[in-house]
Length: 350
Image 1 (cartoon, rainbow, N blue to C red):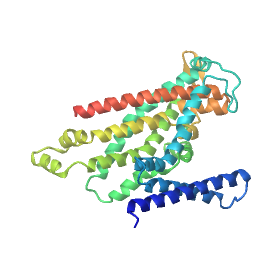
Image 2 (cartoon, rainbow, N blue to C red):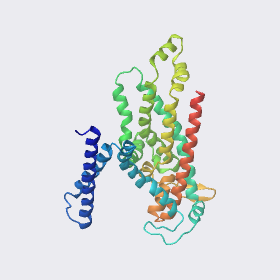
Image 3 (cartoon, helix red, strand yellow):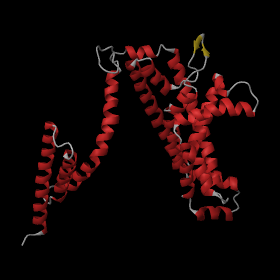
Image 4 (tube, rainbow, N blue to C red):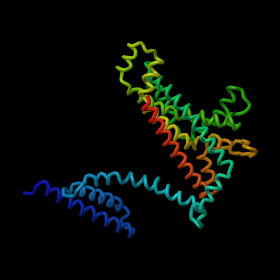
């Protein structure tokens, strides 16, 4: 009589043989350009057979670790193909004259030196940092106030939560064109003004900030609601018994107890604001005149992501655009790490 271990060995061996056979057969069909209707299914079944064979093989050391890696492989492979490999390829392309298709020559640091001689690029960096600072403060403030409202005892909380979150479901391009119509037609009619907000550089940048807050505050609000709901009710009851007023409860109990939530929301707002592209493109397309140290620029509302896109795609200078993207990645990584470290330190203090 076979033992359970022997039965598993036989089962795993059969699965491995069948899986490898189907896998090889599907590859042969692919190379021979035949069996198009079923070679995909053959490949999938073969892979499943190999996975089952490794899983049930009793004498293989760490076979469960192997099977876990196999199940994670599709996700890891997709992440490597879409993020890791393009990142390193992009760093390499930034030192060449890459035109989006082929590389002819290596140019060293020429792309990196030339981008710092462009006033438009330096202006986009400054504008991006200004946008990030404004939105980190305003989005988190508005989202936290909305979260306090949606965790109170008023009626219709579900409606309010859905209504505040709804703008986040609208795509940035569509949202930009909707608000372009609102600023150009609705606001001008209501306030009887001659010019739209997006007609002037200063007010156009303010319009981008307003739209971003309107879109993103609802999403951050849900995270704050989750943090506020994790505060133990007996702590709030004890503070009320001790005579704490609502403001004392807010600043002395609620805010310190949701410090990890504040860290998460600040990080998400920071990274999202840095990468702002779609609303900037649809609402103003980066246009707007500005005079910086005697230099007349026509990209007064163009932030860093849009500047990289215009350099690479619109101006067909992919190598320079890639160099700007590498610098953008370094700036974003450094600022994000610094923000998380500062926020974690504040958590300990609180």
